[in-house]
Length: 193
Image (tube, rainbow, N blue to C red):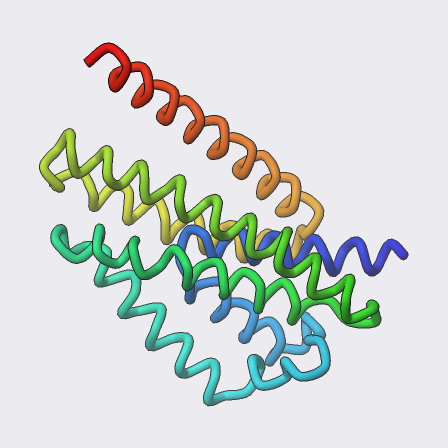
């Protein structure tokens, strides 16, 4: 039972990291699987193969670099939000084995996809705020924070999965509350206008 909890924590931590950057957690999971530090669920062994590692490395380099282009970063957030959610589901499902498929996929979609999507949407809002207040000149700070946080969160998920899952939960709750405050301010402005 404890092993299953740890595996779910690995998946949730990696899924949360997908909210920061889509391909960094997949690359770290692939490397960890290749090093036989993480066992992948049946049907997901392709993640630990050399072609996947190379593809994730190239995609990671392009993704990190593209977020440093001021006009492209906000556009990428539009595409990356659903992509991060899907990646969160995939990494969460890849990490959990010896579980009923219905429960596994339910956890992957709700916890993995939910964490990744919530974090990505929250960060897209922060980037939009940065674009609005700094005309995009501050976005490189947001981009740097995001890829660094993705690496840290991914490594934590592999080596300290329970801590990573707790951080993922805290980040998700924080970003939901942050979004609720923004929506409340927007509605207040709208009602007074």
